Image (cartoon, rainbow, N blue to C red; front, top):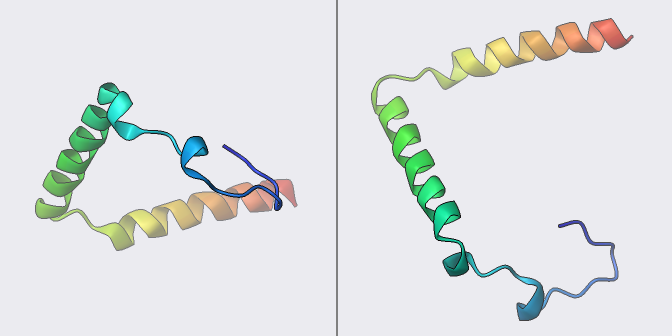
Amino acid sequence: MIHDAGVEISADIIPEVNRHPAVTAAAVEAGSRLGRRLKAGHDRMAVAGNMQEKMMVMVDAIA
């Protein structure tokens, strides 16, 4: 959801996660996958470096 600066956050506009069990299950699965990946020696610095290289190529293509 996107709101402008004048919107007041209240309980009636906050989604209730417990009403969406499929979303909750997907979040649990994503957390499990991330945990397995990190325990297996996932190199976050290498991934960040690769993404930075790709982004720079995209920026150069735009310029």
